[in-house]
Image: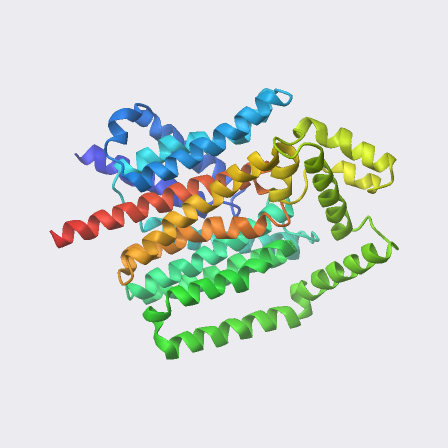
Length: 415
């Protein structure tokens, strides 16, 4: 029994460390997810485990299986290379981890500690790169956009952690979590990744709406006012770089529109999106396949439809258009299912447990992950990067298992 308890603590430590070492420790997320996957080997015999899962658990498992399989099949029918199965396999490898966590009761609240620590480390790393090393955009060993978007997600999850700690009247950790929220968003700002900034007002409003009864009207207005003040200050202070990056985006759009300069950051995205739409038109049902992206782009360059520099990128810088162009409507369907099924499951739990914050907090945290990714997907192909896949699939598994254990704990108390 003692050995089982230690194993459970170790498993949930790996889950927490996925967040803690996500980008503050280079490749930290890789180590943590590998360890928790290796811990799940005993869950390979699915039949007896399936008997202990309910309809919602199975829905989550099936959507991972369906999406991962769709990517594997698309790769097999395109131009098969073993490397093409690397990232799709992660959506399948998370399934035994779901089984493991659903069967292993441990200190699930460690997830919140891991998130807060991860946000603080991410900001410290970003500050070190920008101030000490003098780099233009913090990246932490990843692409700056992936670093920034992951930092933004950690920051928003830290705000969910703050809600949890406030509901439990743990005010010291509430302060840490609030700093974690600012730190994660600060890491995003220091990376200069504009796409993730859109998530702040949208998800911020979602968080305020969901905890309106917990905070009460006075606190809610105070939090809203402070949030607006922080956002306005961050935009107005030149040192944050937000003004400059937004100004560059506006200038790029104007230059692209009048044709004076198209090979800018935004202009290249527009050309990549144009290419993706063209590919979708060529094969709307199943897409052209990833192997045809570069040949078709070269064809468009020859026709002077896009600039030559757009060939340097092998994706559309937009997850939705990437799916449409390479895997067609079928691919987009599976992508949307991968976003919306987990989101629906977590939101359903929010409605089901209206007053129980020991459960609702985990539902909010879980819902934030697909919400963030649906925003990030507008300007980046997150699932073409290892960190993008891992920091989506595994955190959803963690929060779902934590939520289910929170439900079981409350049921045990009531009986």
